[in-house]
Image 1 (cartoon, rainbow, N blue to C red):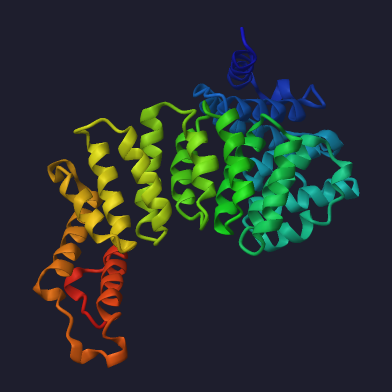
Image 2 (tube, rainbow, N blue to C red; image 1 turned 90 degrees about the vertical axis):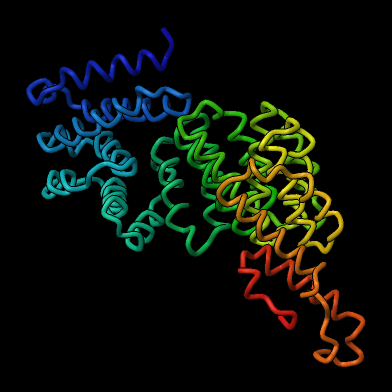
Length: 388
């Protein structure tokens, strides 16, 4: 019987048999129950689907237990800190506020609970103000890790570098736990927002290495695809030195899917070099006559059009079996086709009267680039004009 199974079986026993009378006999029952909450959370990072259901049931049981706890139990430092963990893990603050109304705690524990309650009640400003006052050296790792994870989330709106620093601390303190998993996921997201390529790569690599079985893996991959498209690396070292070898460790079908989604997300935001490289590699890996092959060719064509490689864009587009394309991909195909027709058709003839003599030699190029950017920016081709 492995560790996760033991936790799940024990939690089921607690949920099935816990009652107020039994609870009253143990001073540290609250602490022990909340430790089981933490173990169930950690089990989800290893793919234990039953842990989520048990987690929800045990959270409700703990809420009831807090409501009926004695003053002696609530004033115990270990229980008070455990209840702060309960709040920082999504626990309902109402029962806690009522239970602690007349309870005296040590200064550090009192401040911790005050900050945790502010967070649970959605008062971000107060939560940051209170939780940043804490001397973290006074608390055990399971509290410190969660404090840093929560502070990172609260600081992200105003200070991404500080938020990332706190995530890295939380990850290191609680390696292999739900806090580590959540910290790495957020680190990837925050780092992409400020083009912090080093932390983006490090956090993504750590996540892929440790948490490929996590119940949150699909969420991570979806966000990773979106966030990778934001990476601005003019020398494309990100793609060649990290993205390719990292994705190569995954099954080919997964690698192709991720490359395609990065390219798809990168095209409309103008990250065309990255889109081109991801789509080109996906085209090499995808099976011939597959929809993945056609999607790859489409994103290559779209990025080449934006990069003023019109002939190559047309060549790629002509290789596509558009009957396989649906939804957004079909719409993008139509946009690229429309802009290519405008460039090569009579509508693309340059009205020289619109340009000063010194501009005449560059006007066709400028119009071409403008049209490509408009098309890639998902503007209706019918609204385009040569003077834009």
